[in-house]
Length: 400
Ligand SMILES: Cc1ncc(COP(=O)(O)O)c(C=O)c1O
Image 1 (tube, rainbow, N blue to C red):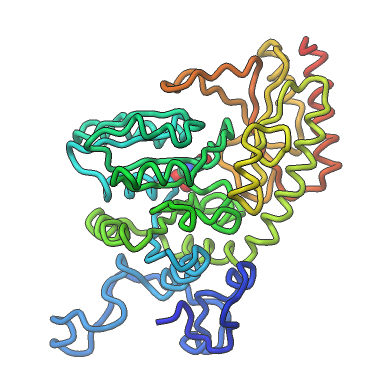
Image 2: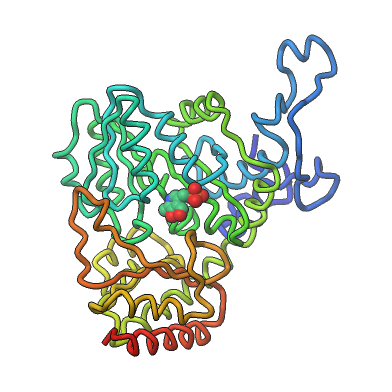
């Protein structure tokens, strides 16, 4: 079956058109553009025979509804022809943990990039370790040299491209080639670029994960995750989702689909504003370094240019050495940049971060305090004025 039953769609739409049109089935929706938000557990069968045979498009709320189907079809089409199925999860982290439980078993070895989102790491060192699965962390910049780290029981390699705090950009195709040569699969947390700007599954990744809480939702109002799997990995992902009882609330599914429809315009603006802010910050005397792979000065620039078609609104800065009270004065002086976790919504955010405490394969020594910024959809001149005011407070508190 085609991803949409609407016959009026173009045959080979570009990604922006796919975002708007995929997963829409206006005929079964009585002409409405959007699917209904189906709140449902029980699905009734017309006859005893139908019930015994589980005959019918839907069986039970946890296994899918017209709302989840619309979102899954849209995501599947966005990911491209390599995508064999899209699983839905109630958060980005649960998409990650469900994936790892699906593809690993006791006695297996997992390789995880050292810059991975910290809760993903905690899951590997906690529950996965308790279940007899060993994790080795690797330098995200290792590239093809990752070959040397494989063990006979290495089953999967996990990358985050780029890491969501330190923004190092791994060479995903080189890592995927090395993994496939050893019979291991590759999982990518592709939340930063989304499938719109990074075609993971076309670059050797077997499973591409979205913390859809971020850019797909786009409005800081849902917790949601998706798992896009290729033909060799979809079957275990689907089985794990069913066996673990993973599903998401219908309102969040609907909001994720609604976010998907406007992803291209939001992401283009996040990209533009973030690059302008990154360049402005590079010229500030208080800033030692800007960590943004789409900046020509960034060590990850060449890989980003080769493998990505765009950048999002998330990047980090390293300040020149300064006392904690100066950093706090900067943060406390800001009015537009909110202090809070997550990212990918319409609003600008800023948080201090420190990778020193948890990295094991690489040493994080930035040389000064580090801040992560998410550039939202506000006017960039207003954002610059807000940060300029923050830097005044920073300097007055002994930052310079
Ligand atoms: C890169 C990355 N992956 C996964 C997650 C987890 O997503 P969620 O908060 O939806 O569980 C986050 C959350 O911040 C993240 O930044």
